[in-house]
Amino acid sequence: MHKRKRFKITDILIGVVFTLFFISLSVIITINFRPLYYFDVNYLNIVETSGYSKEEIIDNYNALIDYSSPFFQGRLEFPTLPSSESGIQHFEEVKNIFTFFYLLVALSFIIVIMIILQKIKKKDYSFLPVSAITAIVLPLTLGLFMAIDFDTSFLVFHKLFFNNDYWLFDPATDPVINILPDTFFLHSALLIILLVLLGSLSLYLIYLHLNKKTGIKHRKIKGIKI
Image 1 (cartoon, rainbow, N blue to C red):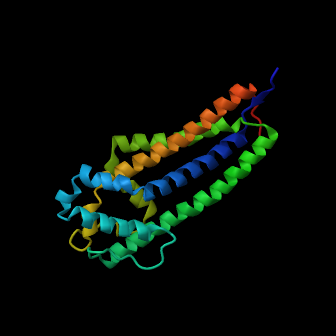
Image 2: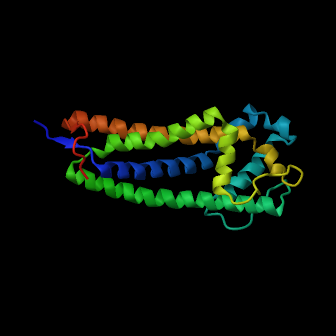
């Protein structure tokens, strides 16, 4: 007879760590997944709406993504597009946010590995379904919010992460905004959510595999354990 294990409060905390790891990793993957933008150049008719050639659009976008890496040293310079000081400062702030996600993914990855090794040692896998559920709550909530009103979601995001209005670009001084339509950011957000959901699903599938292999069973929460 297999021993029934209780879900523990610490399982929820572990789920939060996995959620932070999945989100930060998904953000980094999305930032560096340039084919998404290359697809949108055609799909969103950016050549027609911006007035620039496809080659020029991609060159300037690549320069922006190269600069956004924490490993890039130097000032942002677009190959063919002018930019204002406020525009440059905004992209500096964006780079700082991206750098934070790189640090977060590194830190959360280390903690996740430590947790997994400790749980394997104890043969305690109760954290897997709890972490899967925890990791799915936030992206689904954000996805629902964006589906209802993406414009408001976009505004709230900038209000939360930036303490100025430098993100309100003037196309006359910062024409880069013409090659970065809002719908592209929507597609990026959807990709992040999808990747987090895949991370959550992977945890649950691992749990099902281990459950089938070892016969682990869990009590319904009654007298919650810590």
